Length: 118
Image 1: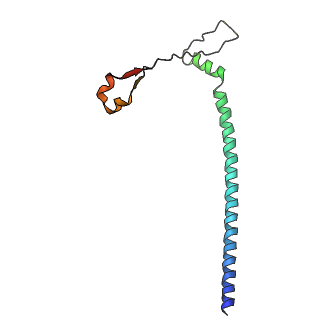
Image 2: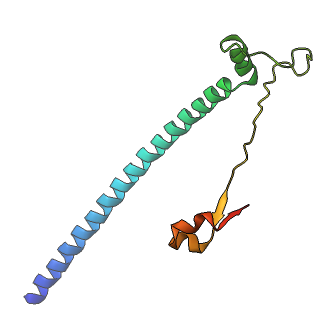
C-alpha cells in the first residue's frame, strides 16, 4: 500500500512539475514575441529619427540658417566652388600647469619652494 501511495505522489509531483515547465516556456515564448515586436518598432523609429537628423544636419541648411537667421557672413563668397562652407577657427590656450613633489602633499607650506614647470 505504501508503495502505491509513494508512486502516486511521485506521479502527481512529476505531472505538476511538467505542467509548470510548459507554462513557463509558453510565457517566455510570448514575452520573446512581444520583445521582438518592440524591437522592430524601435528599429523603425530609429531609422526615421536618423533620416530626420540627416535632413537637419545638411550642410546647405546649416549655412542658410547661419547666414539668414544668425547674420553670419559667408567668408568665401567669391569662390563658387567653396560657397556655403563654414570655417571654424579654434584657438587653443596654453595651460600653465605646475607640478609638485611628494613632499608638497605632506607639507603644504613647501609648495612655493618646490614648484616644477612642464
